[in-house]
Image (cartoon, rainbow, N blue to C red; front, side, top):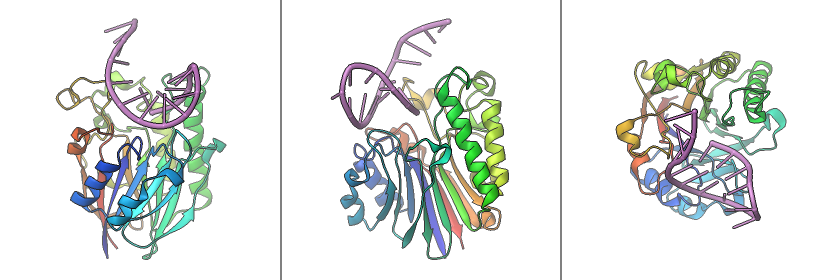
Amino acid sequence: MSFTLATWNINSVRLREPIVCKLLQEQGPDVLCLQECKSPVDKIPTEAFADLGYTFIARGQKGYNGVAILSRLPIEDVGDKDFAGLGHARHVAGRLENGVTIHNFYVPAGGDIPDRDKNEKFGQKLDYLTDMRDWFREDKPEKAILVGDLNIAPREDDVWSHKKLLKVVSHTPIEVEHMAETMEAGDWVDVTRADIPEGPLYSWWSYRARDWSTADKGRRLDHVWATSDIAKSGHSSRVLREARGWEKPSDHAPIFATFDL
DNA sequence: ATGGTAGGTCTCCTA
């Protein structure tokens, strides 16, 4: 069995219902994981997605955060976890009939100042990653895929300027360390980078840039990981960069990967 | 060094 999975920080699923449908129609992923739905679950516009053959699993809250998994394959809701006890809707998991578990994450952005003494949100981000690490250590994931907006660009070629971003939240050494520990704890493999080892693969460009594509000051904040037992079945990774230029775009582009299992 | 844009909600918070 082969299935294609996509992950996309949608920055309001209600406002962007048309481009979610466009993605489903034009790209036809079997599973689409969304982050920053910014909607209570009962206000997610699921009817249009259902008409295209997609069921959904979601966790939501008013105004902030929110994650959803749209799927045209049968999928079972296998729960969520409130990492770091923030009380935010940032994680949900589903299981496909082939036994593969899909974790959909929206890791806290962490505010502007990369110092937990001066900025509580940065501490929460680090704590969130530490809690993920401890959970994966305790309960070793198998046959699992982890996707989402992890809000960290770990490698030098994951940002437009490594030097200029070393002290910018998303690319600081302490965040990169925390991410590496989380990966190691779950024996996760970065499928996107296993597939495409070199060069920029940005998935986010600020709304504040005048000409985002020409300036191309992007970061790779969105990730597709798989546990090492199934990571080799992942292939055909890509970023749908054009989606950043669609009508009323999200500031993130979707990432794709296909798994043969 | 600074400010720039976007979304949700209800006046400013978050990204």
